[in-house]
Length: 210
Image (cartoon, rainbow, N blue to C red; front, side):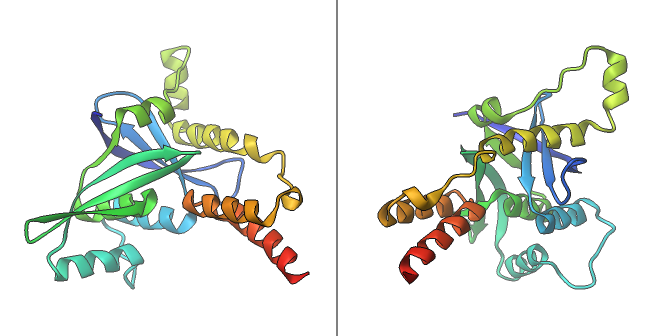
């Protein structure tokens, strides 16, 4: 599978949902954009790394990791967004120490926050970009120029509206057996869907207290 290099276009917030952020990645040799929904803390950490002049009074978690890695001669060589499952992106951090390469699994937002601090390139596979990449089509050059400043917020709102569709019908976990619930819980945790995992855990707790 061929790798596609990505650049960070910026971080956008939803104009329709408070507290919703998306990291917008640009295809280097193309016009597609890869939007990734991230948390507020990760958005802040990435924004600080993008703005070189901003330095927090105390190191953030990703800054601490950078200092730790520098002290022990660990270098982040590159980040690869290698998998997309049920809307969740999975990434690997390729590190090197004493000419020995190691691959570390990481959340994509954390991996990119570290890539920025190490000036490491970010890649994804072509099939992931084919599946999740967005290409905004404008009917005219004038329309594109008018919407250029709002392009990122247009993308994040489009992504969030797509993600919301499956959530409209709230699943009732009462009809599932305990065995099925535990299996669903493992799946939710593996997919980093902690909101779903919490709901399943609540249902399991209710059953076990009876």
